[in-house]
Length: 391
Image 1 (cartoon, helix red, strand yellow):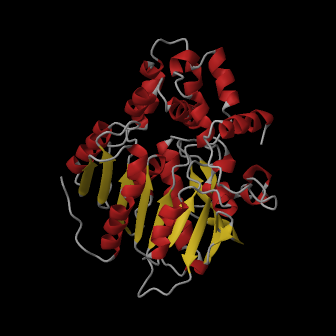
Image 2 (cartoon, one colour; image 1 turned 90 degrees about the horizontal axis):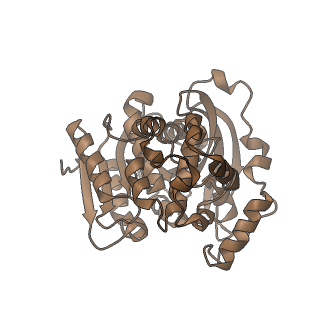
Image 3 (tube, helix red, strand yellow; image 1 turned 45 degrees about the vertical axis):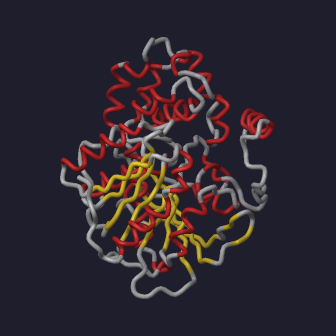
């Protein structure tokens, strides 16, 4: 952790942005950049996507209390946004309770929304700092095996959809290939995530037919999904959630460095300052605008930005698996219209989509109140019931 980030953490704590009840990370658990497990296995470049390269047993904790589960971590070969080989780490959690029949697999994508590797779930699940543990635990309570992948990849490319989708799919492949899980290639798979996790989930669903067609993906649940980064960016820029958008702009530039030409000297300083921030620390950049960090009057309108944003806009192809989308009509971060647009695009391409619009919540509230319906939708797919559709 560098000095700049320590100072920002202290400031964030002082203004109440960090949960005071969160336990400190255990000194015995090294941060990923100091942990040899994360170093790519020699020769990974020649392996096929999803190949297990390393594995180890770990302990998953909530608020410092070990969970009564079996957990292992896997390093697997994946593919970045420009189809180059990379490695990713996944945490696989197996319930100890019996299950009638073949356990299904849930790939759960928390909203990482961060630029530092210490913010990834493979670390936060071990240190008791994973804020979405209660949500993924809903799958464990059903008796499902749950895999959580560090889907932003080795460069922590927050917002880069193709990197994230590939990582999710390869985390699933690696889990199915690991004997300790008790799963097989025929195992029914569901994927779920909200907000930033919904972004990774949506891209995994859209990329799966071409990238990982062998997976038995039977259901997708994605809420508050930023299917259109440009629309989300224009809504957040300059407002209270601007830090999230600026961090995403930096994250995407890690996969598409051509975007760096849009930043001016002040922007380059910003990139260095935000280098390894977690999502709570990004709140310190509230009410900033990308226009402060570029010489362009409309950075998002620049040709290179438009090109990258188009690549990272969902809807150009449709998922094969049925999808449940849920979105607040009054979402203050991700416009409801962006969710409706990808719903329409996927419906037009033959995807069976059920879209639910919530009128009683905003973005963060729906992450919690929308969870039971998402679990129920996936459970019905695992049981083989016909998927409903609003297309």
